[in-house]
Length: 214
Length: 203
Image (cartoon, rainbow over the protein chains, first blue to last red):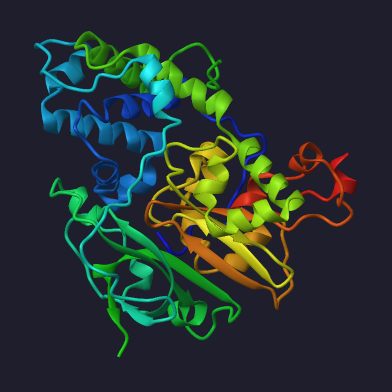
């Protein structure tokens, strides 16, 4: 949503509760618990939440979007049927699933550090300080290259490591790790001459999102 | 725990979520007690006080601060804070001349083990759209007016790297204990939409 206009000021709420309704916490928990039985990954989950019509995306609350995405994955995998969703109870037999999580395992799970860093056989193509351009690309599936940096010139500021590639992982096509960089863009490069000259923005970008600046 | 809806009737979303949880339980895919654990974890165990301990320690201990800025994931794990959405952490330091601001324009990425779940405004369209285009203006929405020559670096969390802003230590707090210092570290100061509380106004 970077750079979209017309949403008005940011309005913080004082003493905001963690969950505004009981059902929000349940949705968060259901998504967490169903990760393994769905054989889903974080990128597929994000894609399911984002791959909806913009008017839907912007008219629903955050956890409504999470709920809808969970239901769509459950239906897609056939773990739940639409007849069951209408009836509000189980009708058919369960599908065999793996990874049903107990309360104790969930307790551990939240405090266990995973990693998205995977070894790759190649050396990083770019180095800190190098000038690059974010590619002008518009993939049909999932991507994590924000529209507002596409086609713009930036500088490599960090080499994070080689990480799971979401564009592939979200589509069930494997982790296909790539080098991941922090890339910084000047405010005026992204937003034009009227932008504040003392501002800059960075994104974390996978190698295939970037090309050497000419 | 109580619902924040008015009245006793259950809302349509409440009914839909209850129905789904029932179906998943009947089919044996979930243990509802595991869902309780998620709710309890975010409501009681993980929150910005974790991050405040990290910041307070960095203010007091220059060696720790150096480790934090070099490898935040390891330095933060030293205090026992690790887990989901804290797998790869980077700490960025505010100074007199530089202010850092963290956003996720694509969704709601946030360093959960040290800050807990993000507030609604962080996930909202106004913040996600404007933080990258007009960070100085967004800070004014939060009552933070920086000098016009203070540089602002925005960090858009587009991968699995999560950013923690190390706010400036308020003047007049040298020699304070970690616990006292942690009391000055607000959630917003660690996102970059705020600054640490000045001691005069915190008492």
